[in-house]
Length: 283
Image (cartoon, rainbow, N blue to C red; front, side):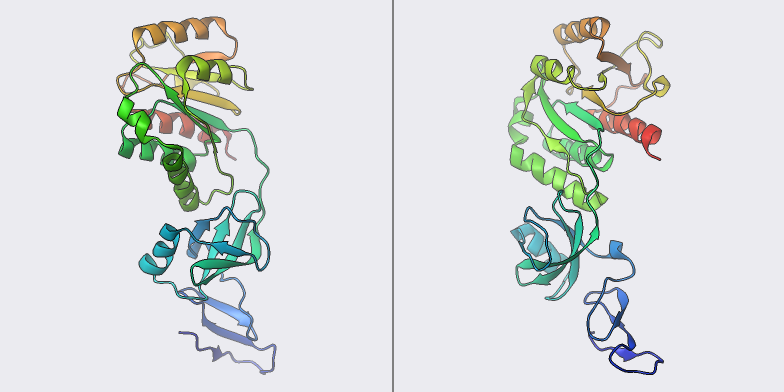
């Protein structure tokens, strides 16, 4: 696999050779020093919390090591991409149970204001899907909210460790460099009080409304920064609805939003809101 085949060249130390990247992607390099393969997106991508610098050793979590060596069958010397949410994306070489950083291939973008998602925890598998799609669609903040109908088991299942793992897994897959901020769970009243004071509108997503009584998401010029509040399974209870409707009528930064005549699952409602922002704001 590592054999090189000389190209038609005059030879010499700087002659161009064609060989196989230690994996599967074909690459060209000069002499014996490999460079990046033509398509970086063919390389696996992993998150690390370690600082990124030339020669830095990046320990792999057990799950990451199993995935790279077991599922992908990579060997020592294989190249992967590493990112930490602070210093861009780097090429790194697999060595035993760690990576060794080589060089930066994508610079770190500045953090821009984006859509935040406030959501009531739901059952584990569906909550994982909600977080995954929110990260893929560009949510900058994820904030769990306790409501009257939030299932106790769902709240207990949504641990900080699990929320972090879901968010990082989605970031690895979706090519994101900026990680969403993960907030501690808060009561509905505390969450609304906090987010209504932030820049941009807080959209309270309501269902079972007459057309025209609440602005429809398709008719609203969504922009960033903004935040969306998604209710629990079964929706907000009567007292919460009265509180939110009163707030939307009186507070200049809180706005009611209707997502259409269908009754959507929480993860579907979240994806609809974030996709609406993405379609209107992404160049």
